[in-house]
Image 1 (cartoon, rainbow, N blue to C red):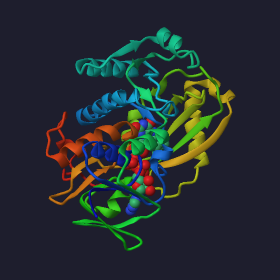
Image 2: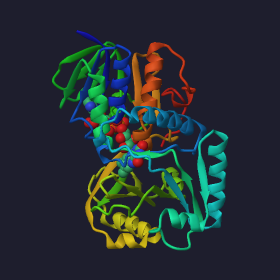
Image 3: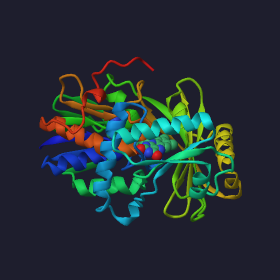
Image 4: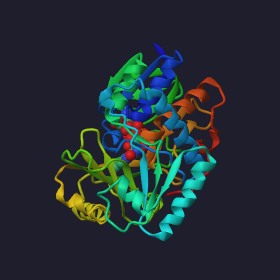
Amino acid sequence: MTYDIAIIGAGIVGAACAASLSREGMSVALIEAKGIATGTTAAGMGHIVVMDDSEAQFALSDLSQKLWNEMATRLPTDCEYEHCGTIWVAADEQEMAEVRRKHAFYSARGLTSEVLDEKALHDAEPNLREGLAGGLLVTGDSVVYQLKATSYLIEDAKPAKVISGRKVTNVASDGVWLETNEKIRAKYIVNAAGIGAASLSPELKIIKRKGHLVITDRYPGFVSHQLIELGYLKSAHGKDSDSVAFNAQPRSTGQILLGSSRQFGIDDAGVDRELLRRMTSRAFEYMPRLRELSAVRTWTGFRPATPDNLPYIGRIGDSNVFAAAGHEGLGITTSLGTAELITDEILGRDSRIDRTPYSPNREVAAH
Ligand SMILES: Cc1cc2nc3c(=O)[nH]c(=O)nc-3n(C[C@H](O)[C@H](O)[C@H](O)COP(=O)(O)OP(=O)(O)OC[C@H]3O[C@@H](n4cnc5c(N)ncnc54)[C@H](O)[C@@H]3O)c2cc1C
């Protein structure tokens, strides 16, 4: 049989593409080397956040957040979708200038946010240390348990075939080859293989960017919003050295998820104790009482990073292979927008946002 679509990778991006393409009546084969949501998706934080670091990142994350909100009413409760909002925390007056710039950026694009002074920040999050200058509350952001959301997307898709535990070794013009030498025939192929995408489509410049996370025991009410220090963007965009930034997420279980770190050039998935110490020290600077809480688990994951911090979404050259990969630290958020753009392009439709900034054929400098 020839499927309409073969999707490589059952992380959240592949799952979202499967759901979107199936909804249009296409027959989808979803092929996963290991297990559903066992790659980077298993390691992420599940923050659904609209970013303002470039117009293209804003457009994709804003579209995606709207799609998450539409889907939220259908999501099972175990997906733990919570509208907790984000507070970007400003340590000093210099960072307050950034708060005002961000506020103006979001307001100009119709997104609600509120500038918090020192007292308002303290009232919103009493466990933050005294003396922080303020922050920006972005009310529309949310949190999801991305593993369950990925499973939900696949159930929603009802793909014609799910092949799990078999790696794609080669992409051909009329399908993909599996390591077992079977061929899955398809009219179009979507490469959603995350950090594995570039080995199948060498045009894509994707490298691994390691991150650490810690989860605490249950402390309901200790943190109410997703909290991120304003220095986070410097950490997310810096290319040269290892970086850490304060990032705390309230889970509906009462647990607190703490991040985050970024490291290039590391293949070892083990926990780096010294980096973890730096990361938690940074968190204690912002929230000293975190020291009193028990951590129950620490883990790492590899973000699929591109040189210009934008994902690859769309047809590669004039082939019938489409890229849906390279979402770095924003792929939980942007999975749904990515799926919509891929579906539009395959169906020859215009999209709600300009697709060109994400084209896999764009010029990007090497890493
Ligand atoms: C520490 C950390 C925190 C994060 N926090 C957030 C956050 O708060 N919000 C947010 O939006 N994003 C966050 N992210 C980013 C997000 O997790 C990723 O961008 C996203 O999970 C990428 O999804 P994916 O489907 O592209 O990749 P993956 O989940 O890695 O899925 C790709 C799949 O393809 C499979 N595969 C690979 N090669 C092959 C092959 N040859 N054949 C068959 N299958 C193959 C893999 O096994 C894998 O399951 C975070 C990431 C990390 C590491």
